[in-house]
Length: 243
Image (tube, rainbow, N blue to C red; front, top):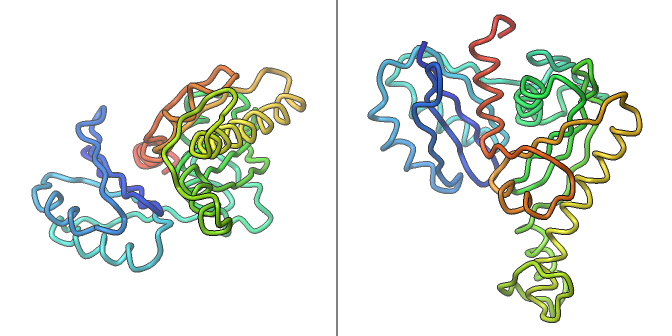
């Protein structure tokens, strides 16, 4: 089976073709979806399409229209009380982002034990899954670029400046960049400790999203890094018996 998986996020639309392994993975800016029209016009032999969208109904309509020539129904993943082998513990299950659930499916399939799933994109979500595959809860914080933008918009003297991560920043650019990375790492490590405190075994930590590779070197916990975690979750849902 040849499967097309699509993860439409706030900043990027990630998509890939899977058939016993990834044949192709590509991205497009959510603000410029017309690039997808050109690339998808060459697609053929697609047996199944599975997609998740958190970018709003306009993007969903655009994606649907671009894929009409394939004559293949799109299976839009929505949040519910369970997805794959993940049990959704949100008070209102439908309010949880379906991309978060898909990322948890991928992480659970890989870890098969308590796991923290940190999806590092425009926003950073840090979600806890216990040893039974139950989503216990999670946090949301601004991603690196959002943190910098909020500072620039809210404080007159804190402009968006180039910077790098150093132990003791002595320039504003370095201070903001280091602060955003350290805040992200602190949130992830704190959630990992919370799950460890209620788990029999040490939880796994799996990072996904476009900024996963940026944050990874500064974490002080053993972890795995998979940029396209949501796509892997979609494939797992699309090809498994529980789909």
